[in-house]
Image (cartoon, rainbow, N blue to C red; front, side, top):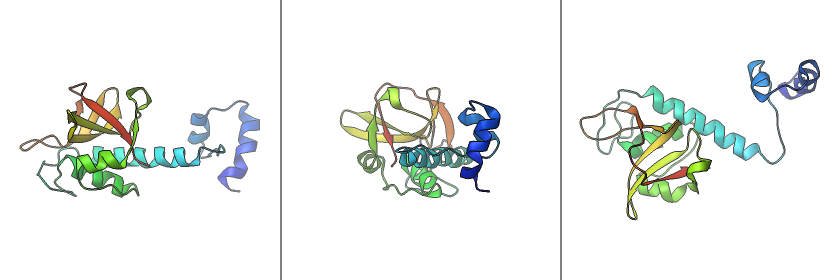
Length: 157
């Protein structure tokens, strides 16, 4: 029996089951019109896990992994491992993503730091105002609180 075939019987046994309950028992629910959003969320979640797994990796300008990273190298590497292609630099990644409001951001979205019209840094939003990123020379990949309001958000499609 496939996961989709189990959903009706699970729903009948559980009454009004939440998505978390269904996930806990290994089922999935498909809602028309949301498949691409679900796929994007799944890729973003995987990219976030990949970035977190690189905690402590040294920053190196121009590095794209797997052992050293610059900021856009970390996002490129993480999304590549999640099955999504991004261009090389933070500015190019900004131009490639679907721009979203701060109120719409969710874990796995990209956070772009800018000064005027210049995008100079990128990280992956981890929730609760924090990002995974490769900060600068002499530092390592780490989780850090967003330190400025001069940010924009982008969602990888």
